[in-house]
Image (cartoon, rainbow, N blue to C red; front, side):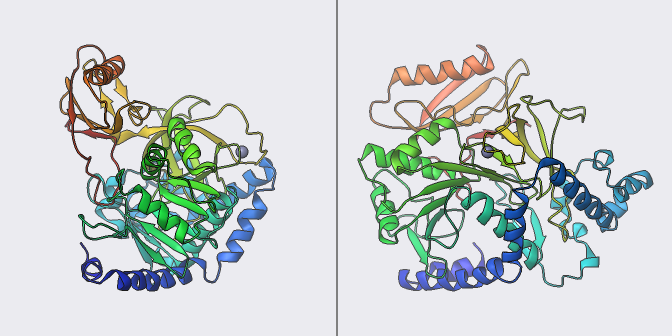
Length: 457
Ligand SMILES: [Zn+2]
C-alpha cells in the first residue's frame, strides 16, 4: 500500500468521499484542461476522412515520430546505423520489435529529453505479472488520451465523460476486506462512482445497484469480469437495472459474446468494448455494430506472424503497436503481449478504421498441452457453464491442470466431468485435470481477474 493509500484507509467513509473528490478535481484539470477540446475536435474530424487521406496523414505522423525517437537514449544506443536511417525515413517495418523487459528495466531511457518536459506524469501498469511498467506522459498527451476516449469510446456508445459514470478499476476504494458497505466512493467533481471489485458477491450486488441508482449513473466503465459478475448476480436475484443507464464500456479484460449477452440482459443497454493497454500503445473501440475499430490516428498497429511478416485477415498473430501520439515516451514496435486477428469484412458503419475481429488472448496466458500445442482461448471457458460462478485455470506442469471453481448451488459430479472434458478436448486426453471448488478466486493487487495462471518455467 502506498503512503497515500495508508492515510486514505484510516479516514472515515465521509472523508474518503471528500478525498476521492479532491483527487478527482486534480485529475479533472489534468485530463480535461488546455488542449483537450482541440484534441477531441481532431479525433472527431479525422473520423470522417477517407482511408487514403488518413493513411497519408498517418505516414506523416509516423515519419516525424520515428525521426525524433532515433535520438531517444534507448534507441540511440540500441539501433544500428541502418535502423536509424530507416527511422529517419519513416520505414517502420525495418525497425526491431521492442520487448517489455528493457522498458521495465530502465523506463527513463525511453524519455525524449528534447521535449523538455520537466515533470512528466507517471502511470504504472498493474503488474499482474512481474514488476509494473512505468510510462511517462506530458499533460498534453494525457489530454489527447482522454479526448480519444471521449470521442471514440464514450461518444460512439452515445455517452460522455461529462455524464455520471461508475468505474470498476484497481483503485483502492474500500480498504476493509470485511466491510458491510458502502462498496463505492463518489467523486463529486466528475460525478463518478468508484466501485470496489473486491467486495462483489451475490449478496452485495444489490448495494452496488443501489449506488448506481442513487447517483443516476448513465454509463459504466472498467473491468469486464466485474461487470459480468454483477450482471449475473442481478439476473439471479431479479434486481432491475438503473433506469438512467445508457451504455456499458468494458476495458482491461476480454469481453466474450457470452459475457456480453448476460450483461445486455441485466443492464438493459448495449455493451461496448474498449481495447487498449496501460502503456496506451494502441487504441481501439467498438462502434454501434460492436466491431472493434483500431484508431489509426493514434498509432500504427501490426499483427505479425512469428517470422515477422504481416498476418492475413482472420489469421491470429502477435499484436505490435507504435503510438505516434506518445512522443515524450515513444515505444516503437512494442510487443504488447496479445494475440489477435484482423477482420476480413469491412464494418457497415463505414468509418475509415480497420477492424480487429478478435483479441484472442494474452501471450502470458498460454496453456500448453503435453504434445506442445498452445492454447490462448482459455479465457472464458467457464462463462457458459451452469453452476459455475467463476473459474480459473492453473497450469502446474505440462500434464497437470488445476481448475479452481467458485460453484453455485447445484454444482456436482456432472459439472466436474464436463469441465474435465472441456479441458481435455482442448489439450488432449493425456492431461490430468483436478477440479477444486473454492469460496472465491483471489484478484490481482489491482483487482483484476486472471483467467489463467501458468506455473510452467
Ligand atoms: Zn463500425
